[in-house]
Image (cartoon, rainbow, N blue to C red; front, top):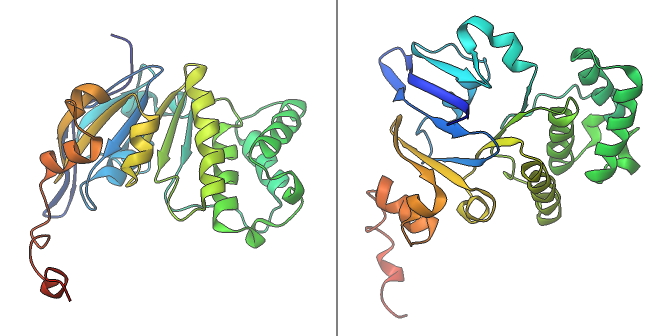
Length: 253
């Protein structure tokens, strides 16, 4: 099996708190993998370890055949990331920002200019390409962050809550771009709380709960004939408070 992402006992402790507990991920190349879990389950911590922002307490990870602890730079050159907390240089224009990112990847100037134009057009940002990023809406910043993650044509794309806080038009644009990426056999690793989007986009899913990977595989196998939402609830359980409170809603007025 040709895996784009493999982890072996990946673990992260913050003092006495074990945020990620011996996770063994297997993500095949060319798949759209949805990484799901309740708030605080360990999703973002896992992505930060896979993208080199956090060092694991123990365990190892391989991306695109490279051991992150030994050859992390080679892996990062072929990876794109859209983090949940956007970190853009807001005093640059959109085109200046993409040019800066392209130069970081040592891309030729002509290629940077060509791809910047294509991405800005694809994501509906052409009219704002000379506007300072600080003036962008949240949805526009999400799209610019995606453009920056794609400019070097990565083989693997990490998306941490890309649909959080954006409108329906921006969401549809991003979904269209992601579908095109998968169509050309790129690998996408997505976290999202919006299970309906995951169910529409993803071919494979993994569910993490209290730091442990409790289920992973093709979407149809994980769902077992149910909706993804139902399968998710069966794995992680209902919140303890779900069946109590708000008694005034239970009886007719």
